[in-house]
Image (cartoon, one colour):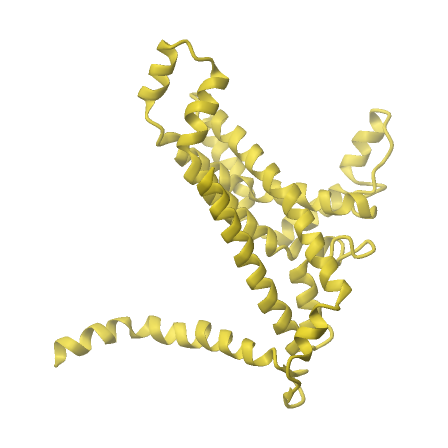
Length: 283
């Protein structure tokens, strides 16, 4: 009897953690989608009204569109920059360890701190980037005040913040490619581009898939950058889906509707990742 009980006792901390912090919040949020609740007053059942409202909410649809724009800019930029830097840092160069650590450093710095620093760099009148443009005879850019520039600016900053993590992942993938493949390619007279596209890319395909998935999940969770830098503006051009859900829940106290938005958004993320998985595996 004792031998049967001990295994359950050993796993009981995780079971308790799972029930309290994962299972209960998920079930409660699903129940909440069928109710209206402002935290203070008791919950009121309102059926599927939250779901009906969701599909007629132009601001939420725009936030989804803004998030997708961010992903379209951020993911390719993230992959290209991280892969190029990983290939360079995989070579025998001086201070290689220093540069690896330097590129990874922004990953462990607080997102709020990084966002505030880049907000100053993007300043229209006193920002460093516009000062450089002015010094070389070009006009200033409204990085965060022009709707057409605001989201690309945030995507560039997010890439700088997170690229160090993906450099490490690509370095691991590059170091698993057998050296004899490159040696055989050299004997056949292959150039650097042929070796990259015929050997390197196919061999690190699992790493690319991992980077795409992680970048997608990270991109969909875009919150700190628009919250601190623009508040979702200008003209809601940087209003991300997570920021809009946050505002519905903690600005307007529409907890039931916020839960509905969150559930729909989670299903959307799952669908996008499954499509990516099938496409990348096919390729």
